[in-house]
Image (tube, rainbow, N blue to C red; front, side, top):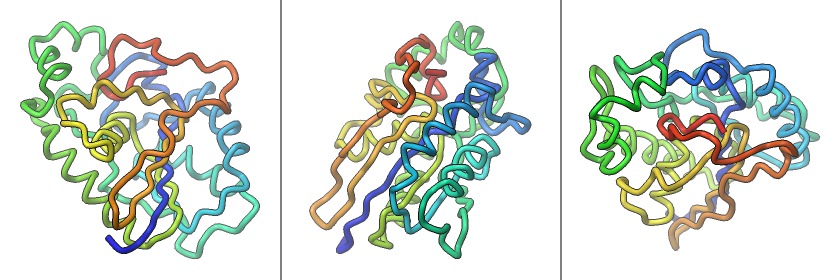
Length: 222
């Protein structure tokens, strides 16, 4: 890679699925909760003066509802391309687990493998962690070819996998990373490789409490 790109990875704000403590996945009708809307207002203020060349988002509503206000509130104009919806940054396809309560899912035998050896796991009727990792890392590499500062709004597990890869961690250890709703992480990508400049920053959320969820699948609820 000859370019030097700075990628802001933004997790969507607290959602109605987070509020209900369910694994949303790609289920429709999941939006920002009132808490999430407040978080996005604070996040927008924090990023207002940052100059982005591109805005990229998972096509799911909770991400679009997060990156939209960020794009609109900044001091410089939105690029002509607008907000790019990119399926590479979709939430993992949890298959038949989607929309289920995390408290119930955590009692299933597959849960232990998800925490200890996710590289061996494929969700029933869904995606494997290896497939998701390949998808999102290829998407990040393609986006970084522009050599610009880019904002990407996506999901907790997606960001954790991207950060783990940038840090040279094995996929089986990505659950050691915590990513809260409306957090910011930054990866710098250049010819010399990737560097993580910032991880799970929530300083803009004065009342934010991290690490409160025991169920880390889906990024947790923050």
